[in-house]
Amino acid sequence: MAELETRELEYFVAVAEELHFGRAAACLAIAQPALSKAIRRLESRLGVKLLERSSRHVALTPAGEALLHHGRHALNAVSAAAEKARRAGDQQARLRLVIKPGGDANLLSGILAAYAGRPDARQVDILFGGATDRADYVRDGRADVALLYVPFDDMTGLDHEILTVEGRVAILPPDHRLASRSEITLADLAQETLPRWKGVRWTGAPEARPGPEVTDAVEALQMIRLGRAAAILPRSLAQPMHPDLVHRPVTDAPRSQLVLAWSQDDRRGLVASFVAAAADAARATE
Image (cartoon, rainbow, N blue to C red; front, side, top):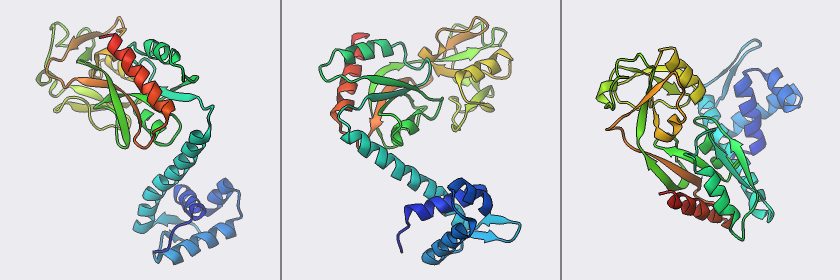
């Protein structure tokens, strides 16, 4: 099969996302006839029809849907490769760490101090990601390392160092039927409504009812305060607890791991040194 050119793929993805040649051409800053010609040339090279189009309507064919899905990943991979190459060649590069606000189990200060004491230390830039996108920061090159929670975060393509292992707690409104107990089990939470983190199907309890979709802990806690849901979180993410809520240990919930993650193909001393410092700092707190 003929190889795809990156520019052709960019043109197709723009049209597929806009489903309008005029808007796509404007986004790409090219003339619409040139864009139409490029898409026809791509279809000819692949031997499939990617778009159904008329004077008023543009729609993806099954082949077009497949190319859009895989094409996005391919373009992201090309962009990540370029960024990682630039970073690898920059001898003065800073280290970029992405975290979720409050998602460091109180280890970050110690990690940074341990790293600063190493002779090869660089400046560390702290980036803040959302509840479910921090692993993507590492995969696409926006960050060098990330603090992630296993099994919540997707570890595909990443290596990691376990920093701490902790139990999980249920976050409940004070008038909840389970709030008076000193500890609870997953079975106690069966049929409870638990929030769904954006981009994640798993709620943390096998038989729980999926509740409202939330993008961060602030939204989740608001749903709990309103009595719309309960939640199961790693213990460190439940501290400090909001005065209007209670938390109870879930004794049989799988323990969660706070890990420092980096790309599997990243062998730079910059990253290895930070990982070693983080592991030392975590052991010092045990």
